[in-house]
Every structure is written in C-alpha cells, then in structure tokens.
Length: 198
Image (cartoon, rainbow, N blue to C red; front, side, top):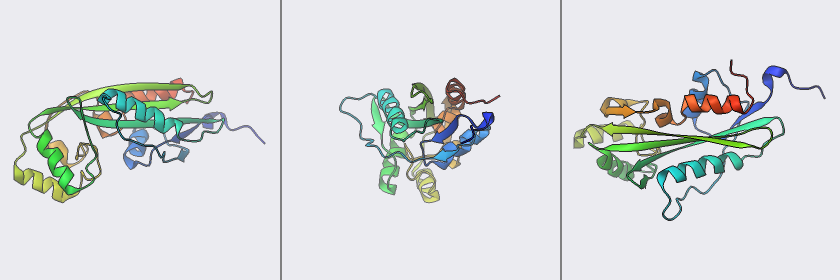
C-alpha cells in the first residue's frame, strides 16, 4: 500500500454533524476528510459548572469517534450559560420562548470548547468564553423570531449568524465561537496536531 500524500496526512475527522462547524472550518481553508456523529450522553453532572461541562463534552465527543492511525479527530461543544445555569437547546417553541425571555435584556456567556486528538492519541483542548447581550426583546420580537424557525434546536434558542444578530447589542469575545467553533483556537489546535494549514 502506498503512503498517503504529504498534503493529505494526517486526515481530519470532524466529530460533528453540524453544518455550521463544517462551514466555519471552510473559512480557514479546512475540509474534513470524514464526518462522524458522536453519540454521547449530554446530561450535565450535578453541580457541574458551564465551563467544565463544555470541556467535558468536547473531549467526550472527540474520544467517542473511532480514529484510524492516520487521523486527527476534531470535536467541539458550545454551551450557553446564564450565571452558573446551563441553558438547554430549544427542542420546542415553548422552550425557545422561555429561553429568549430569560436572555432578553441580559448578558450571558457562550462557552465554546474545542478538542483535537492527534495521530498519537494525544488530546489538546482550548476553551473560549464570549459574552453576549440581547436588547430587551418585546413579545412581538420574540414571536417573530420563533416564527422564523431559526433558533429551534440551538443552544440558548438562537443563532447569532442569522436574524438574531440584529437583536444582539453587545458581543465580547469570539463571534465564531458563539456560532460553534472558535476559529483562532481551532486553527492552533489543528496545527499542533500536525495538519499543514499554511
């Protein structure tokens, strides 16, 4: 068997089915060779802080993927937190309405953790916290946003890369981290794992 071409080694596995993470990787010129959807229990542990939760999930997702000898695995988790409270994904319009009402007029944190496991099995993790503040949302604004269908299924009930951005008055930190993958930290991890990114 011939050795893989130098520019294709190592191969990258993205441990996420999220199209947003694929799009974010494309912004830095990276395309995953393989996509794998990790199946893990995402229930927070009793007393677990939002940051510890995000780190644990990113690492668990990376380790849940079977990795070949020539593969690097990349996984991430973005957690939305209000104080020490971990906010769930908006799995229904009822939950989304509650989340948006909670976030209305307040600052919250988006904690994005990224884990890369290199070809030797070494895991490296970087975590970024971004502060986000919504304007005070009127009931009509909440209704209109929910009707758009945009934030359903997403952590905190919104997508900063879409219509919600017009309702956000303040962001301090990594915009790409709020979307789902902090690109500065991700690029550094991939380079440390042996990928040639220029």
